[in-house]
Image (cartoon, each protein chain N blue to C red):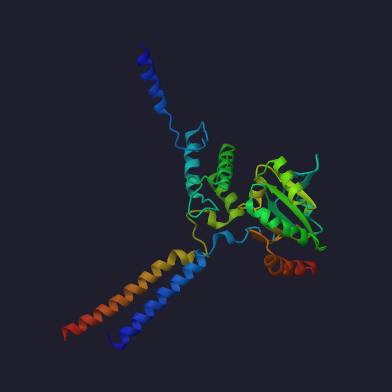
Length: 133
Length: 181
């Protein structure tokens, strides 16, 4: 009887997951999902290359708490991201939006690739012509 | 490779190198030196208690009418112990008002810091939960903001304000603000 009770209680222990160091509780699962997405999209401003979700820095904890409070207050994702951007700049977004200043960043590699391909084809056709002679 | 082949190779290399340089300028460099988002903007609105004077509350209006150096500090911040003695000298500058923002600290530890290290601040804001710091876009301590008489943030320095920083970054800007720019 006691053995069974012990085994049964072990099941309950294993059902809890203690993966997160802090637990942000939401009654609404959509809010919980938005919290997850936002803390993945927001960078820890003072870490090397971590998002808020992965970072344990104090600033990250504070910012996560702010995301939590704003979600519970009914703010939209855009409002929350704008709040962060206004104080910490574009850098706080892990995936910066297209803008004039980072247009080169987005299009640069493509432009370079096109230039490279053009040169490659010119070199190829030139060498192919030579081989035909 | 013929002569034109060498030229093409050189062109590709130049194009590639310039992209490296551009990328480095855009996304490289020390991220801790990111300029504040609030440069030339008014300080955020706030209502925060004074650290040392019971019942005294400060707002953004307390920055108006003078040139303020707002120093973000905390008793848990090792660099702040290095920086703090410098403020004794900088505070002698009659053109500026030195204000402290005690960031995410325990009151008794903050007061102990001032007792032991010296209190060179005109007054201190007690930002217990760090929310005021976040309004200023603070990354941590120490940081120092230069605020003009209209209450606009003109400069933000991350890290210790060494004599070099004070002489070459802050003083020239203070002079400029004094002249009305």
